[in-house]
Every structure is written in C-alpha cells, then in structure tokens.
Length: 330
Image (tube, rainbow, N blue to C red; front, side):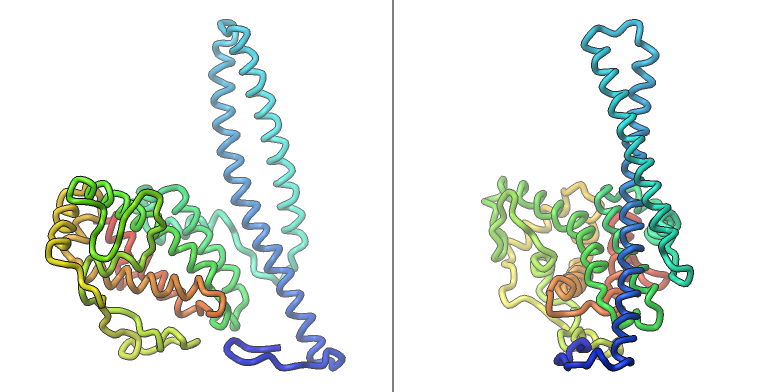
C-alpha cells in the first residue's frame, strides 16, 4: 500500500482494518466503474439516436416517392429500412443495459445525470462559443466534465485523486481548436514566403504539433508556471506559482515580421488575439501546455487544484476569461 509520492509499504490483509479498507476500496471502484460505463453508454446512445433520426428522415423521403422509385432505388430503400430496424433494436438493447446498470448502483452512490452534465458543459462555455467548437471538441469537454464528476463523487478524497484523464480531454480540445489550425495555416502561408521554416521549427504536412511549440513563436518572454510549484499536491499561493520564462533561441526579426504578416491576413477568430497580445497569448498557451504535460506523464498526478487551474485557463470562470471565450467570444 502506498500514497502518492511515497514508497509502497507491506500490509497484512489478515488484519481486520486492512481487510475492511481493501473491501471498501474495491466496492468504491466497482461503483465508479459502473457509473463510468453508464455515462459512456449514454453517450453512445445519444450518437445512435442521432443516426436513427437521420435514417428515419431518409426513409420518410423515400416513402413519399416510393411509386416513382426504380428497382435500384427500391433496393436502397429496403436496405435503409433494414438498417433503421437494426439501429432501433441496438438502441433498445442499450437502453435495457443502462436500466440494469442503474438498478445495480447502490442507493448511497452519487448519481450522475448525463443530460444535466452535458448541459452544464454547454453553459460553462456559453452558446456563442459552444456552437463554434468542432463536434469532437464538444465531446472532449463533455468527457472532461464526466471524469471530473466521477472523481468528485468520491467526496472528501477528491482533492487527492488523479484528474489526468479529465485534464487531457480539455487539452485535446485546445490542440484541435488552436494548435492544429494555426500551424496548418502558417505552413501554407510560409510556402509562398521563402519556405516552411520559422524560428527553429521546420513545418511540414501531417506533422504532430504541440502546445509547447507556439509560445516561443509569439514572444521571447512570458509568464509561466513554476515546475517546483506544480510538484505540490496542495494549492500553491499565487506569489509562489508564477515566474517569468522564455526561449533560449529567440525568433529573428525577419521571422517575427513574417509571423505578424501571416496573423494580419489570417481569417481566423484567434488571429487578432495572437497578433495584438502575443505576450499574453504565449503565457496562456504555455500554462495550458505545462498542465497538459503533467497530465500526460504516467509518473505524475494532475491533482484537483491543477485541474481546476487548467479548467479556468481553457473554459474561464466569473473572474477569468478562458481561452475558448477569448477566441470565439469576441
């Protein structure tokens, strides 16, 4: 048995204290697994319902013109009817399984309503931002909230659990909405401006770009998170959390001018922010990158306070504008 950051210690399971502790842990794990499965099945059910609605509309259109259908179109119509019946049967099976899982969850376990959770995510970013996001990013935000809800259902132990999965899903949305479109568009621009190299980066199609690549292109210095502070399992005072950071290989004046030229003509909601406030943008993205890396490493925990900081950076809160609001809410 061990605590985070501590070496494991042998225990004797024949002792009632340790046996009861293990049994309680296994019971809690079983409830969490069933709750997670319930949420995943609800998400799958939502997708299937969407497919059924599409198929139903297609069948209805064909039914209106059935007397005018050719043999080939009639065969297509029958195929759609068959597929619709299969999807409906699969959905009924999923609904039955969900009902069974719900009945198996203990009465004392925290119940998570997937529909209410999905609405909470949408409210967190606001409709103006929500409808600008790619569908995969919407799913990532929902998945982050789902994992957060599962961990916070643990009660008083929630602050010491690992929020890495939730943190990664928030980061995936940022990479999809910010990093990929930026570097893809920059690459296409640089092809006409002397070649796809800027700073120390060689751009190319299908390259894997990361959050950490962007700050040094935008600015030479920015406000970052201290590595020593991020090693803490408990929240750190703001004075001890931040420090100035920067790049050891500053971008040349010529490359900086090319970047500004690119941003001034790039038709994307984030272009003005990156162009007008490069230092602030570099700091915002660098801090998200550091927390994302913490979540990605198997030997580190993303504690609750880390996750809440990441959530504020990405989604914002009453006193702070999140990255997605900065981009899509202006």
